[in-house]
Length: 295
Image 1: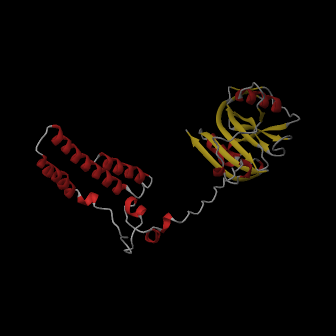
Image 2: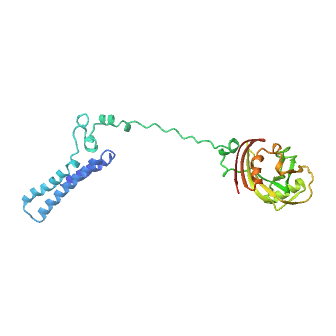
Image 3: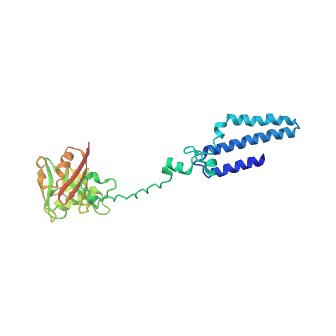
C-alpha cells in the first residue's frame, strides 16, 4: 500500500506542471492517497494489536464509504472527451480538469492558442516649452522660471502718479512706470528705489509691493516683474538718458500708449488689491492673460 501511496503522490507532482488546468484533479489524487493511507493505518492497527483478521473487511469498508461520500471530488477522471466522445490520451485523462481532447480544447479556448498582439510602444508626448505656448493655461507656472527679474515703481503725489516715456531697453517708446532689472545681491525693494532714482531723479520712500507679473515671450525671453507703490518721495524730477519722466493724473492714465497688460491689472492694484498676473506676449502684442487678485 505504501507503494500505491507513493505512486499516487508522484502523479500529483506531475499534475503540478499543469496546475492551470488541473486544480480539481490534483485535489482528487490527494484525496485518493489519503483514503489509501487510512486503509493502510487500519490494517497496521489490526496487525500490531493481533486483532482478528476478519476485521480487515470492515476496515476496507471505511475508506470505501468515505470515498463514496467524496465521489464527486474523486470520480472526475474520464476516459472519453466530454465534447466529442473520442478516447482521451493519458495526459488529458490524468492532468486536465476539463476532460477535453486537444482539438476540442483549442476550439473552446482559442484565446489560449493565439498570441496577443503586441501593444504599440508608448510614445512620449514632447514637453511643451513655455515659448511654444499661446495660452497661459498651457504653462505650468509653478515650474516656470524667468530669464530675468525686474521691478516697476509707481510713485504717487496727490492725485498724480509718476510715469516715464521709456527711451531704451525693453518697451522703449512706450509709457511705463520707472523700473528695471534687479541686480545681484539686491532685493526687489532696493532695486525699485535705485531704478526710480536713476531714471527720474525721484527717490521713492518706503515703497510697498502690490503685485507680481509674469511674462512669457514667444521668442523665449521670460520676465518676472515686482510691482511697487510709493506714496512719498524725495528729490526733483529730471530727464535722463533712459527716460523722460512726467506726472499723470491717476484717473486719466494713458493706457493706449502703455503695455497692453497694464489696463487689466493696474486698476485692480489702484483699488488696493494684491495682484498676480500671467501673460504671454509676441513682441508687444498680448496673446493671453490670467490675473488673480486678493484684498
